[in-house]
Length: 258
Image (cartoon, rainbow, N blue to C red; front, side):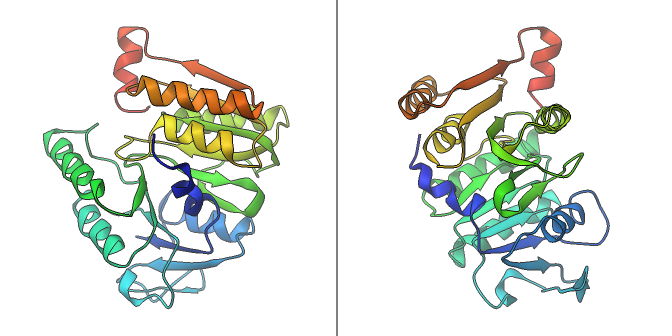
């Protein structure tokens, strides 16, 4: 488990770049639309060399062209462009990247190789990555809604970290139906860098979360997992976890985070 302060740019960014932004598509359009609609007060830089504007915002051809360094880069681009974009993020000293793009270790042999290369790239880099193959994240209180939501967000003190993007969104709907206010949502995806233990530890230590929920498919780092739960215990924050993947069908679903 690494220093959890490295997750701050995901939840408190001043400037966000969306690489692959568009006015069409669930994530290329939906994430940008959510940031605009739900009150993100910082700067948003759509990145797409094929467009001049996206939803009225100036669109930039490359991360190299934006006026100020983003705190967070969100990648909604084809798999073949992800590695070069991560190298660009590292070169520009962007501290955090959220990779929505799928098609890595969960997909095929080429994807497994690309994810292994990604892990090697990040091992000595200052860039922190959530994903790939994730459903995004949210910080409800400050309008950082970088995921799909089935209804308008209601701010509160419950946070949720999930190894399944689909289950995170489904449980978001249950929270909304019961009028339970939320603070942070984290979809971890393939956990090439930020892990379940990192997410739990961050929520245990940040000030806006009072209760932590989680959807768990598997635990690879038992020590880090236990340490994160200890942090929550010391902070007086209840942790409620749901574990899946006990049956053959459940294990197959867990392998793709669906």
